[in-house]
Image (tube, rainbow, N blue to C red; front, side, top):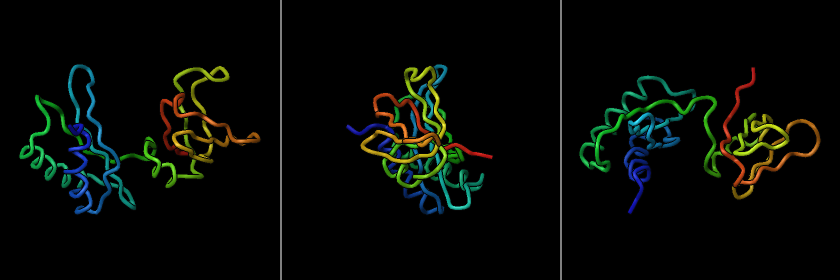
Length: 152
């Protein structure tokens, strides 16, 4: 049986494309006792409130028709954001050479956050250039999160 996020992705991706956007990610998470279904959009030049509204209205109607989720949930549509999480191999390829933040599950050299430039990606492992010699390799099992980082 398909997961909720897979079903919603299949419903929402064409709607996002019809509205000139890309469906970046779908989350179905429980927070503070409430379920949230979140769609994150991306678009060249940035996503605006009208993009979110158009996608939200159409996808909401589709969710009512298909009804893939039992029980109540909050539905949100927003921009993926400038400091979005990188999850899929294509995300890493697209943003190779960009500033990122790597967060680890356990301390490594006394810390859990590492800022640098995305220098490589290999089956879930990330290479991070921190400007001090060879890039550091983080294995998939030690990575909690990799996200883009805005540098001013």
